[in-house]
Length: 435
Image 1 (spheres, rainbow, N blue to C red):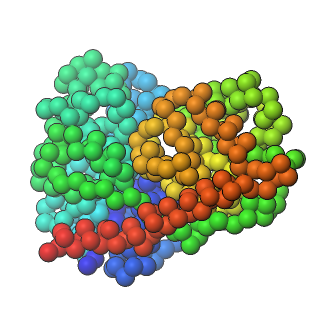
Image 2: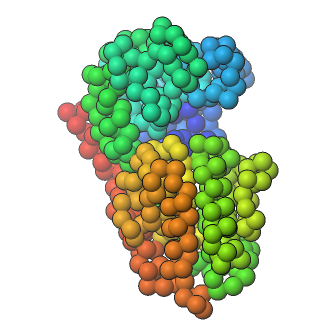
Image 3: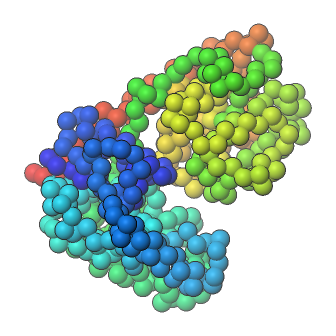
């Protein structure tokens, strides 16, 4: 079988990373696979690139700005919501691309920001090839929004209208118009929908735009050979992290844009302020590690715990950061199946998050960490405090509880998310489509 993975990027953002990892996992399992992206950011013989000439790069910039300009004009000139939606009115038509011609199955991932247009999707439908679409957010199930939150207008018929993401008070607004176009495209495209989590699969299945699709749930893969446990003391020493006492406790937080409100910087701030005010005994011991883009304004929201802002990190340094941490916290308000929890888990580090999206599916055992009620900073603070007390002996050695969590996290990552496990699940799906 010949599989073509299509993604806007091979590196930028969690969806791109997941698509690239799946490409690698399938290749390692013997599948003839290629990946087609807008801009190739990593040298890889499996990659094809659309914008590989100066003219194509200029075309992509024009397409990108056209889409954003329309959104800006249609959302009441609200810059804060400029990237909350995508229209796919403009983009590339891949119908005649050599890799599309070569493939037996087209496998879409995240395709927005000027890459694939609705017209381009319609072109793919005319190839008569099975189309699989892995959901990294809910854009394929809605008219224009990536994260509908508590809005369910995409489930009605006709879908959408009165779109809160563009501050609309009209029924026949941009979202309704795009929904009608999408519906027509999807009737002919007949995409096979794969949710990275059961949560996103079930939510997408309510969409009136996807009423003729079949739905599956397959997680993203991770290389558990690369992401693996190493001694915490060694990881901290290699990162030059100061261990000031046997009770030192490293809390890890981060994302590509760690200051993004959807990643929960406000909730993290409230959690840490609660800890600082109500648990003075932890003040000198808790140390916060932050990776990714993190602005000075975001840092100013935090209480005066010792904080290490690490910025963007190579994969090797991320491996050490996950291993240096006692607990990874992801107070995100909107999530699907975070790569970061998978990576922490594979390194033997438990995670703490809110009951949103696919997070409860990932942290489904006390040995893997804890799921706090949605936006409950109080519960999150209480867990961090109790975890600090339980994971170290007075002389700084890991307790039986900490060692048990470490083993359980590692085993869970291998059993559920290892590249070979996920590749086999996808091969089973592909085989069924080619029968």
